[in-house]
Length: 313
Image (cartoon, rainbow, N blue to C red; front, side):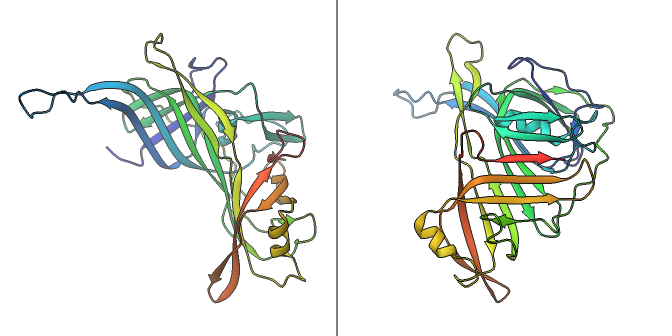
């Protein structure tokens, strides 16, 4: 059995923990770095007795954890969802609302109510795992000269695996754009000509178990109970007169972040915005002899549920 012969299908659930039955034609996505963990509590039976021998353990709650990486790209048609599988579907399982404006854009913004779940089917070269009720977290990675990627970290409900193989999958033909002419600005135009190699943004969702002894499995649901979005960027160091990184850090100044448009083909253009970015730290770094900064940052709300907006046009 081969590691590379892994197929992943994703579909949004109409009702939490109700399998919407993904298909290879409409719901297959391209993935790599797949790490599937089926976790089960080990309940030790550590009692006193005349023998020092261990007693057999009992099995407690079971669940699934799944992480993987996808490309970040558009749908192929501006303001329209594709007929084939698309990585953006997973945002809906990570506390993001999907807004489709016909012929204009598809956008994702955070929500604080009405969280959705997704079902993920994973085929590991003949071993089939159905994971319902998935919710999770994501990290956006933008690096110069490469296409943007998304690291996903999902948690779902346990279903016993079975032997099965999928039919041939149909994937989107859209090729992700390259991170060039990325339009990165900090504080609107104040730092628009900066030299930055990499930007990462993570939602940092808090995903916790909702348990009940009246449920057959004991695990009713994975709940999203909070988020603390953060990230990092690595600009070349500049004089304070050029851009006052240290003054902004000291004052805790809130600045706007804009990344994009990345790409030039309609239906495959990415823009990421955040209205209230704050520098958490400023660390010196060496970039092949050039002085640079390593700056972790946090993202805060403006009016609420708007601390990060991801748009495909």
